[in-house]
Length: 265
Image (tube, rainbow, N blue to C red; front, side):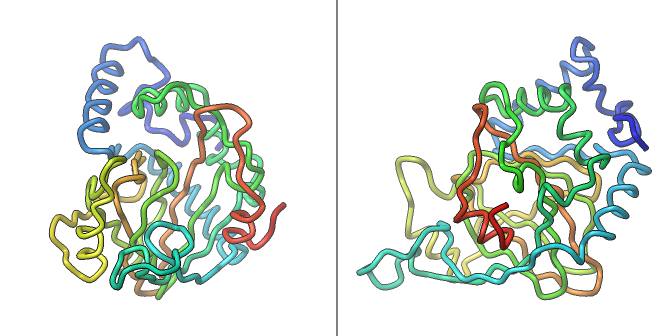
């Protein structure tokens, strides 16, 4: 499998034909959804053979992923000193998962083919609506595959980036649900009380994303808190993560690389 039509369901999503009225209508619908909800799910984005190919490839590499378990707060920041009692920035939880880095993805992988395909990049950029997208310059972070095994868990957190592009490759036997609370904070109002109540177990306004294998997901997580529930069973949860930037030559720090990949290069 070495062509884009082997992987993307172009009959359902003719993104190689940007002037096609069907494509334009579809794009307008997704743009509206992204603007209103901060999340957009494109089911069956991958073809069935393409999905199987990527699952088999990722499964074969899963044992090489860097697995880490870390504690931290929902803000992905150091806990400030002298915080008031029960301040949400002082409430810590655990995240545990494995990650395959960009340099572990085979050169001829369909994941690379999709990531670098210009019509795909332009299509995603138009949905997100923040201007043209550029490939992430980090040699480890441009493409990742998150590999989660039994008992792995992704704690409630906010993203430090404006958007995430992902493709669900495989669901676990049980658990692994992507939960979120839409716009629980804003740029002008941190709404600490609402965040604290959620972290203490109040599930008011919690939504569960329906993102079956083969779907493309665009998600804005800077103000929408989210988590992945504990994985149960022997089947891995595998998600491909695409890193794009709003400017050329954007990369990550050695500090972040060390935490995520266990190495800096």
